[in-house]
Length: 153
Image (cartoon, rainbow, N blue to C red):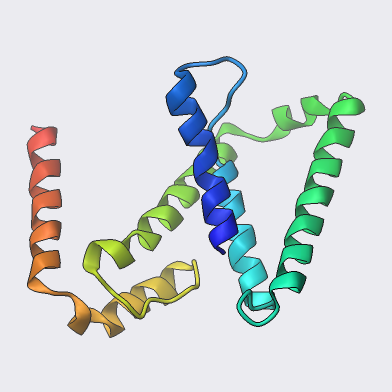
């Protein structure tokens, strides 16, 4: 999963260096990397079978690129026009929820956190591991909420 988390921060890093560019799009690609990494981790353990894990990752990436290139060569980009704005906004909102939930581990200082990305396992893990949350992390949460409240007013 480390490979995919590293690859998901590269586009925003390039964007930060280049500033605004009409040729660079930073969007839901990083969440696709995280989802694929999680799916692969459920199928094959990286620590037990690293070669198989990497082969599956490279194969999935190759076929995704092949599919995208074939759509481009066949000039089928107009198909995206059939996706409604609500679908795209829903996908982006779902991506934001997944990323936010995964940040709870570091925010609360939980060591034994779930590797799943669904909302119920993540919240169950937070509730089950609530004894690990220290006073330091309580103060982090308080500062975040107070800072958000000050910015709203």
